[in-house]
Image (cartoon, rainbow, N blue to C red; front, side):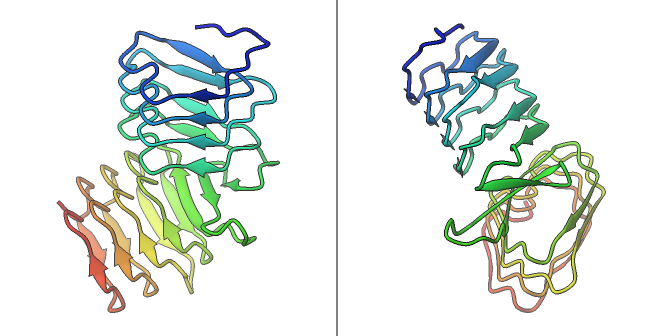
Length: 220
C-alpha cells in the first residue's frame, strides 16, 4: 500500500486493515495513533515503517496482533505503548527508540525503558525487551516490569537484579512463554500480576516475604 507524500491522514481507526493481505506499509507522517487491532491478523505483514518527520504518538491494544513484523523503529514523538499492543506478534524481535525521544530510551540496545509518571525524570519501567536477549541485568531504579515485556524471550538464560532493587510490580504476562528457568524476585516486589510466568520454563523461583498479591494463572 502506498500513500501520497502529501497525505493528511492523522489516525488509522480500529480494525482498518484487519485480516488483509497487506505485506508492507509506510505510515504517513501526520498519523498520530495506530488504533486497536488496526493490523490484527495481517499474517503477511512483515514490514512497517514510518515516514520521515512522523508524528506518531501511540500504538493501541492488539494493533499488530498476529502479524509477521520483525522490527519497528519508532519515531521521536512516540509516547504510549498500550497494554497488548504487540500481543501474539511472535516474530517481532526488535523495537527501537531514537535517542532524542524524551519519553523512552534504550538500555543496552535491547530494552526499552520509560516513565510511569510523565512529570518524573526517572525511567522506571521496562516496556519491551528484544526477543533474542540472552542475559538481563535489571537496574535498581526499575519499579515496574510492564505487560508482556519479556514475553516470547525464548533465548533468555539469566535475569538478575541490581542490589537494592526498587522493583514493585511484575506485570501481567511479563515473562510469559519465555525460556527463563530461574529467578530470585527482589525483596521490594509487592505484586505479581496474572500470567506473569505463564508457560515459561521456570524451574526455580524465590518469592520474598513482602509480596502481598499473586494474581490468577501466574505460573500456569
